[in-house]
Image (cartoon, rainbow, N blue to C red):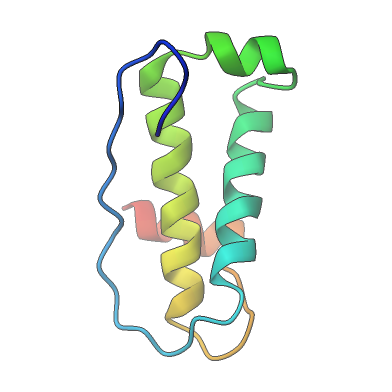
Length: 88
């Protein structure tokens, strides 16, 4: 993750067995935006101020959403229950 004036943060996405990649990008974006909203990040100023650990958690969840989508055929993103189960 790159933000002006902040250190570069890296995230390694989960490894899954891929059945299909249709919908993965949309799932990533939906997971990212949902995570930001749940963290209370609703403005540009809030995004600029968000702590690195919060942003890292949002990105990790978004990548998990996309990875889980890839385990299914078709654009079929995970439900909240499936996401919670995958988090362990």
